[in-house]
Length: 462
Image (cartoon, rainbow, N blue to C red):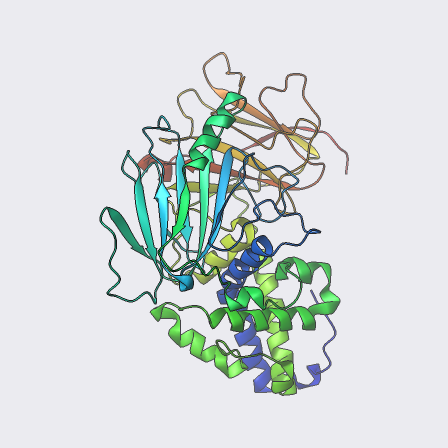
């Protein structure tokens, strides 16, 4: 990925190297933060021309009452066997009460109300696994809420690491009459402002967002000739987001180092304030960071499946955090769900719709979960693939799955439909990837071997 830079004559200057190192590190470190505020802006301030399914005002919940389809484009890698409830909560406006439904009333249906800070850490998960069967009320306090705030009796107090909180409610859903039952659970999820704190003000970084509400990685891939403007918008938004964020104590040193490149929390950013070598280096660093993220998102060992047990809570795992924001923004912590990425077949060849694949689970060897599991297929753009069957995922709750004579289960992934479609997951003609999700994973999920996809035929000649 290259672009003409007017100041590359100064690239041997040590200040170019300084800018390049700051630009790369600031992009990887700050990408999840910027993506959080960008997604908030997209959903809270969506215009009529933007296709947004998860639209809601600040400090209000929005219930999406149908599973995600290929039409939904505001959050990458959505699951297709869930109803989502979402809400952007600004605790700078004051404390908020989150009312968690009773699992008894809803007959043990799986749900989780995942809470994320503005660095994408999944810091709390009220729901079926963790909340009392009769439900509960969670009082959310921001990092700046005064310490003498008195919580009402019966509330569980949770202090968020950041003022901006993203709640993503996930409710398992089937078909037919089951949809209405899942919607009934949705209706029991409520968000309520503490008395006198219903101002509903947006974070400044959301209301003063700079540039188009587009992922900077996608923007740079589509318009490499606009790298300077894309980098400028990213760094501007990063400074604004940092002005409303509390970096963890472990990150204070790196945040201070970024100020050497004029990336100052809460301060305006302008290319005009940088000398030519520093400016060229900072731009090159962002381009390098984007290239690193794209490269790291692909398995270089070509393993058929790569399971991740460190998502949701990242600490200083900056690249993992950025990769997750890029390929699966809003991942759950591994005690709630385990995700496995499938990019290659059993012969270490990249998955493509030019071939037909089989994936067989031996009898008694299905994914080890206490809730449910599913495999979802994504097109190369990280969204669901539009297909005539409108089937985007397949799993233990898929109707009419056919077992093998010995009790095993064989799934078929291909572009063209097989004669029997009960166990078929449609694929595009070109590259795609899979995500296996295991909700409420058992301990043995860490050692369980995921069956590789076996290529059995070539469908399309390249």
